[in-house]
Image (cartoon, rainbow, N blue to C red; front, side, top):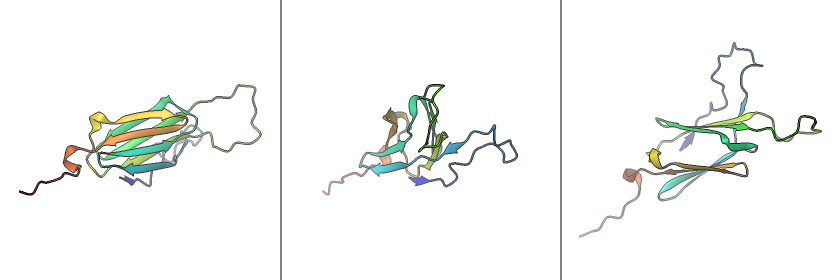
Length: 129
């Protein structure tokens, strides 16, 4: 798997008003490969299961996560460590995966994806006769 460097670019043309254009931040993530799958952890603090959208099209895995406001209306922060932007990540999947068996969970601000490898790319043991 490799990363697409243009993941934070918005699809809206540059001439559009910046105030109306959605702003996205690229989340931190890790990718681990096992014999059977790729395990991707995407760090999306403030996002819930309902705010996450995942799409696999051709060789592009796209993740968009919307943050939910947890503060009351009369609360005023003194300092923010994390920007209020939503998250968007695009990864290039350069190995065949079994798209029908991809699983995803969100727990404590971490989106965990499991992308099972397609049978043709899994390592096999060959018996010598």
